[in-house]
Length: 386
Image 1: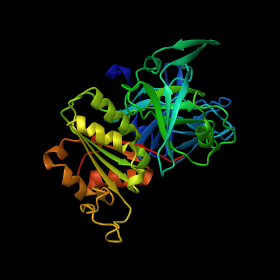
Image 2: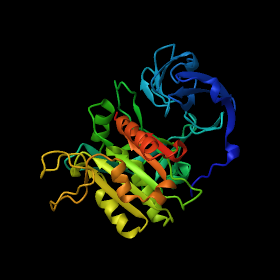
Image 3: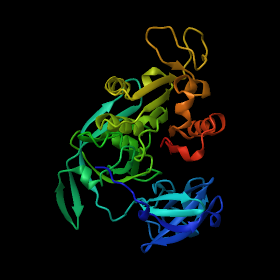
Image 4: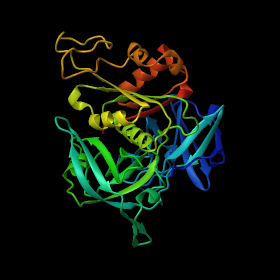
């Protein structure tokens, strides 16, 4: 089951004109103090009481997407509530927020008192010739309640029926001296229709990632969530969705595509998946298999490495004639999109973009300026690469 949000779930808390760019405002909803921040015209909301020793984040300082507590210097990511600098080690609750006209409306998305679910690691799947690993966890978990442990048979129910594309917080334990804290949030790359919970990430040198990759099968981790608005629309499946993916940013699209395929949704999906080379195309076999059984799914792969026949990047529209690569070369651009999307479809499509910040910026410019798609038909999720 997928949770549906009704309009009454949202409460007006402020006027957009009252929060200038790079400014914050504290509001209160159901007794909870929340800060709303305006970052480059986009609004974000997290709890305003520092999880370290209760410092007032509303009196702190903003830098990019981070807010710094004025008491002890803890920092939090305004997009997710994630701790980015100690001494705090617990994230802030994040809140779903939307703007209607000049009104800012908010709905609680996270709860610091929400139960943590303990999951068991089933297997690790390393992608050959890359630094990417997937971690699959059993859906059977254990919920911590008032000092007692209660077995939870259906983890979907415990996780509030997460939607394809949402993320959750993973506490793997044993993480020390990590500048971004001991807990990370990851997209749930599995679909709600699958019998496991999966995260997929690049393994870096951070203490958290090094601890994660050493986990053995049978290890226990704690998960809390879900959160996030980067999910499939639910009101009108007549609108085509166009996914623009860069590298590890494909993870929410795996969840969405698998869900749409399993549920046989009458939803046309076109995905442009950009990677450095063919070895770094994640989930390609699964995507190809799902394309075979889902007539509404089309995936265009493109790689940015040089065409070996020409010795330089080719036009995005050219196809290599070599037998081992049949996809596109070059970055996603207007010509590539128009090659696969006709004008009629383009005018009524919804765009989803996920990838590293430079790719996000380039794609937003492409869609809004070159393709003349209004901003309200674009959804964005950034992967900062921590």
